[in-house]
Image: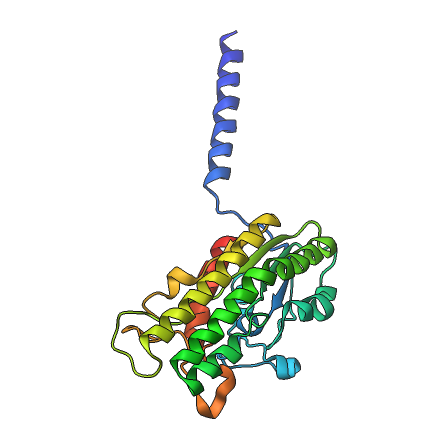
Length: 267
């Protein structure tokens, strides 16, 4: 009886030790995700440089947040079809075909071009405060009227093609830090532009949540790195010699702003 009890205790101790060692050992989970990145220039990485030759005018950068995630995490597969200038209809017509039932992770940044980000900034730079404010107001009216519906069509298309995927909708940074001494646009124009971006992000977040998707909000992490801030700038100001990169994240904005927020939400 005593021997049997000793054997039982020894076996119990060995089992407990094995369990403890298993818990203490670092996880060696295989990177099994099949990841597809969708969206516009903020997802393709315009402004970050190092564009891949295959992407052509879509300007997909190796410094964009999807590419940085691929480099760091090494999912089982990765493909970015994000493209500069893409609107919601472009994502639906040209990008959703990259998804399949085997896709397990999707990121998407889109909606800014549907309300005319680029045209607004051109108007604000060239025509002054009154026309700037009017252009932003028109974009806000359009966003309130149409954006949730347009995004909903994108999100339902994603869910239809990738029914098992976890989907991360990634927003836009607010361009300007207010209350600083800053040349260029008036304080009124800067505040109105920020208001418009916040509206787009808020509508996007609500639409993402309605679809059951996660929303990666990059606004707070860019604070201190916006235009007119005193810190390192993570956004390009107006660039006359390369107009396309204006108001887009730099490589530092992608790596220091977009990537950590996306990584935190995507896992």
